[in-house]
Image (cartoon, rainbow, N blue to C red; front, top):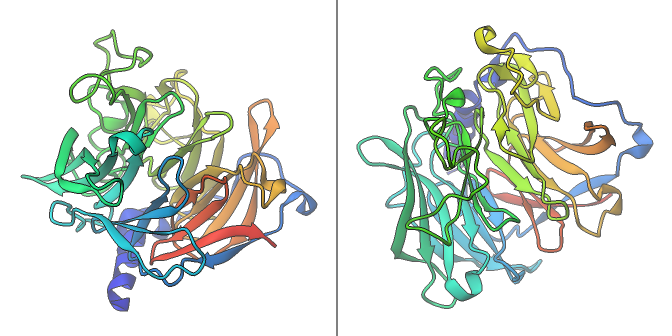
Amino acid sequence: MKSQRLLIVFALLSLLFPGCTDKNMAASKHAGAAVSSAAIPAVKLQRVFKDVRMDAIVFLTQAPEDDRYWYAVEKAGRVLRFENKAAVAESSIFVDITDRVDAGPSEAGLLGMAFHPQFRTNGYVYLSYTGNDAGLKSYISRFKSLDSGNSLSTDTEKRLLEVAQPYSNHNGGNILFGPDGFFYIGLGDGGAGGDPKGHGQNTQTLLGSLLRIDVDKGDPYAIPAGNPFVNSNKGLPAIFAWGLRNPWRWSFDRATGKLWLADVGQDNWEEVNIVEKPGNFGWNGKEGKHCYKTAHCENPEYIDPVIEYSHAEGCSITGGYVYRGRQIPELNGIYLYADFCSGKLWGARDAGNGVYESFQLLDTGLNISSFAQGHDGEIYILHFMGEVYRLVPQ
């Protein structure tokens, strides 16, 4: 099992993130002004839930208005449920769809999960996964709990969306309900290197986009009135933002509602965008703030990232959350993010005039696949190999 896990990590580093082995790395750079060491909050990681066996975990969440349990998403196709207690040792299977998940490709599998805001009354949970039906496809499906929230019935699956994947990587996978009540879906550009099919700048495909739909209306969903192409033939109506390469992890700030979206880069640059309105975020014309495809790099409609760093500091960004807990008041309002390859953990604070200054908090040595945020605003970090850590004061 240990050797199998090491092979999984190697596959992720060499296939999922080819920039990790790029010998022509750009000079190290983080957007924003330097921060004095006195201004950097002193934090450390504390291992939690260490007796709960988890494998290849990619997401961790809690149900709305209920902090009694955590739900851990495993890449292979299971969601585990366990008590939110320090000494917890047992878990139950909340749902198991390994029979319909294709987790073979390095970036494929069960990739995202979202509780409906009214889960207590309707029992709805949404899963984002890849399957193989005459080729790899991304599915967004709704499942229902028939036992008062203890588990999901696999027989209740209703597919909302099915998107063919031309290659085996850049599947995105994150799904969340926004503060506006709408359902957001992240999809990568479809894979290979450099977006060879031009999906990022093609608004006639859902690939390379952030989608926004209304799952409480229509069948299987309706389109919110504020989507940019709802009354236009210039793009598909479900698209909210585009020009994305692989929006693996993104989140909403629970205090301001801002959407912080980390987009995995290609050869040299990783980036974080703030999505406050519909728009074009540049890929594959630009990688970060830099030209990638010179032929269509200078487009005034491109929205630049607020944070970027080069592959001298890592090779695959993992987006996190804005800290809104009480245990580390110095972190309040700071956006946390990390790199899967290097294990570095950073924070970014608003320096005014749209500028964000970044600073390194820790060099964790972990393969950080995702972050989690409890209802109390505290932050957890997921090590892909099956470990969960809580961010605590030093």
